[in-house]
Image (cartoon, rainbow, N blue to C red; front, side, top):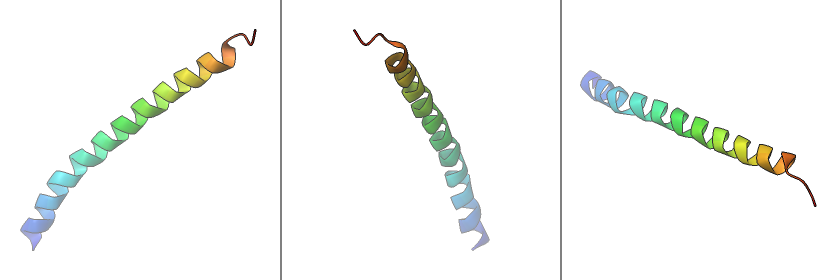
Length: 43
């Protein structure tokens, strides 16, 4: 059972950090889009 837990941790930990990196990219892109919309003229 210890082997299964170690194998699962070996797979899940990199996926967790990839998910965090993807979330950071989404936040940055949406922030840039919101700033463009906020700062553009309404004419």
